[in-house]
Amino acid sequence: MLIKPKVPRLAVLLTSIFATLNTPVFAADTDTIKKGEQLYNQNCSVCHQADAIGKPGFAPSLTNPELLSISSDKFFEGTIRDGRAGTGMPPFSHLGRKDVKAIVAYLQSHATLPNRSKEVDAQARSYGDERLGKQWFDDICSTCHGVNGDGYAAGGTGTAIGKASFLSKASDGFIRETIKYGRSNTRMLGFSGPTAMANMNDQEIDDVIAYMRSLAKSSKQ
Image (cartoon, rainbow, N blue to C red):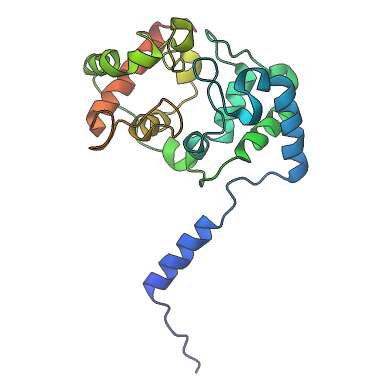
């Protein structure tokens, strides 16, 4: 009888890790990506600039590595389709589902990190204290995002994170990851860890999320 040799558990683990690292971070075909690039240049580049690198205080980067790694296609598609009411981002539903998906494929083609959106969106909901969150928000977040999270409209350098049009599409995990680790090469720094702008613990971050959710309830947009 042929006895199959046992594969060491470490070897199995390493094989799994390398397989993950070698998995493409986007799966769209070349033609779709090229179509998406054309559509992006026609409709989006005027604000988000060439290669979607964004412009501080005007339009955010859409090709930031951390953003792409935690954003699902659904998140991008919904944002493009519906826009962000109360901001300079208009809806592009007139493009139709196929063209919107092509633009998302183009954006995702810039990804350099594995996409973790499923894992991030599956994180537990925040059950923080919005009263404590307001203190953190006023002291830290409002400096860039505005007192009510109005972003650029309030003269801030950060995006409008207090609008229902954003908060209705962003999961608590998405917001949590952004606060913790920030966005490289942007003004959004991380707020978790001893070398961060402020070493906020998990509960304090959830308090901020709770306060942000309360802003959406009071916001008409």
